[in-house]
Image 1 (cartoon, rainbow, N blue to C red):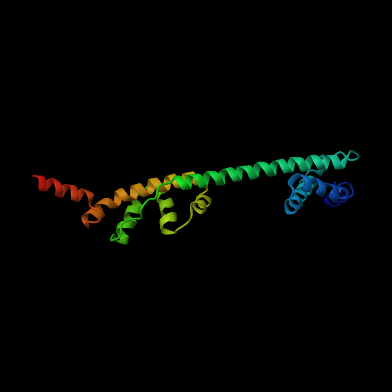
Image 2: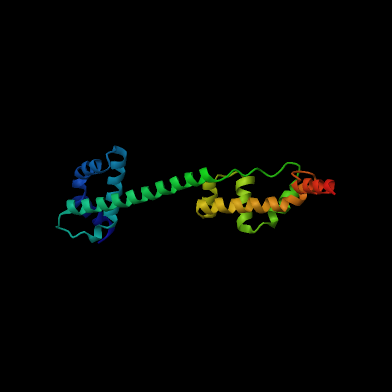
Length: 188
């Protein structure tokens, strides 16, 4: 069956049930905009699957089955998105604040420390701290879960602090080790 004759058959069989399907969609989702979207998705799916419809059978029942299947898929997808968003918020609320890199370090020292990081950590630190991207943007850019971004950022920053510690200590910035050395020399 060619495209035009398939469309004509679909138009003759399915479109007369549009208003009945819209009423059913309104009852299912209880929101006009969502009902319109559900009907549109149902008819799109039905048109794509129309070759499976047995001509002469109850088209309205077939369309309702397509609608219930489509609505079920939409609900599952929506539930997954909510679960992911709730998890992201909970994770973000539990992550401890990490102070920024100490001031007084040169750009060259910071860049050298950044280059010394393994690539998977360096790219996340670069995108978060240099490019000022949000976790979600980084996850999309790198095509990794947001939890992976957060983990890599935490580990990357920890590695950066370790790499920058010698530079900072040599300039007396955050010199905990220097203070301890001074305290031990005073005790002697």
